[in-house]
Length: 303
Image (cartoon, rainbow, N blue to C red; front, side):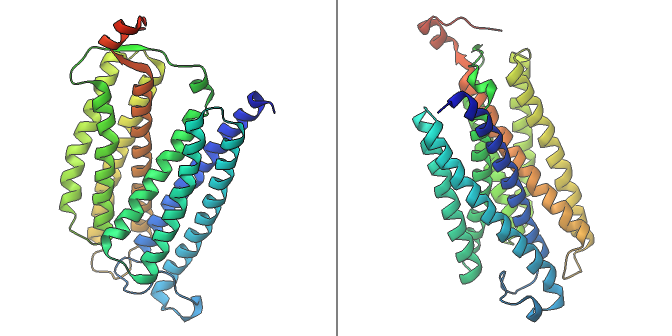
């Protein structure tokens, strides 16, 4: 088996899986947004028997289930492919972990709509979807040609450690996404999400600027930091516009199509923000070394 010929296709397949997963996240947001304020089950048995105002939600729910089935099927293929061609044992187990996440996500989603579980379960369901998307993006990074070429080591001489800062970013973004999911599921008001957005946005931009200031000439770190900062700014703008759209249509029982579209874009961009934060943490871990470790290993720093 020629691994060198198969792995480029594995990388392309990983990108396809990541794109489909992003579509799944967007489809999930469409279901939640379209059914906002409607106290009926998410999975009605017959399209013709539901109320007219619910038929849009049924349509989105059917689409969501179809994409979820596709993503689950693609993930199983990915895990098998990784197990057959990957020499890195941790990559094989990462593929198995992705399959386990799909199974848990499917069970959790089904139980949520069937048994009307508490809102924290629905919020956990949304957060797991975000984590799974970040996992698919990480697999695409790990199978990319640039990863195969190896790291370009640079020295981290700042304080606090850039590794610590970069690892904190995806954690804080995930907390912010959970607050957003809580607001969409009406677990609490919008204020925790707004306050979190101010803090997390400031932290993310600070870390991105810190990376650019230290390693602006590093090709990978430079691109990742700029991407994270740009996506974060777009996300904040979408959040403001979406909230204003919700306020303008607050008296309507069913949200307008423009409000639904904005919410979907906001959730999808949130997923991209989370994935980009994960990529930055991965690339910092791979390319940045503390000065003490560089000296101990005799590795020259490349500025």
